[in-house]
Length: 235
Image (cartoon, rainbow, N blue to C red; front, side, top):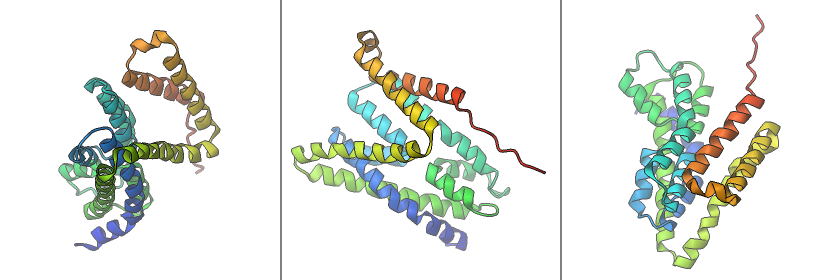
């Protein structure tokens, strides 16, 4: 175990602890939705993204098509492509493509944030330490949540489903308090969802595609009305 790997593990411990609670909720949701524990573990290890997993699992519970699940996951996870491209500029030049692809698998919002703040070039052992400890936290929480939910009486495990709403509130509220544009975009998304839910003409559109349509329209309007301002550097 190299010093870089140890340093990556040390830097990833807070991520690991944070992932435990979120993935615990995902394990509860999966088993509560009627899926076996191994499905929860398989999804967590193959699709390392909280928002993508929760969205996909909800669509699976609703019984939507594979195309809807794939498109929704694609749009939600598209930002990781940009993060991986950005982070590749900090990787040491001697890291081969196969190892860069392995690093790309483990890029999440938190991993990207921690790695971006590191000074100097990033080595492969450091990234593996950071990713593996984060993955360990995510998988551990998933397994614990799934096991506990499966051991509970049905009436109690069903009531635990409310935890997902608490998690979503915890994710959304802090950015809303800091940014007016995000607040307006979220409110517009809510209004658009209500329109598509209560107007019968939209009932022909499945739940999965409603999520996709709402996401695209809201994010498109947000990008148009509130474009990110590039920072100008003074020579």
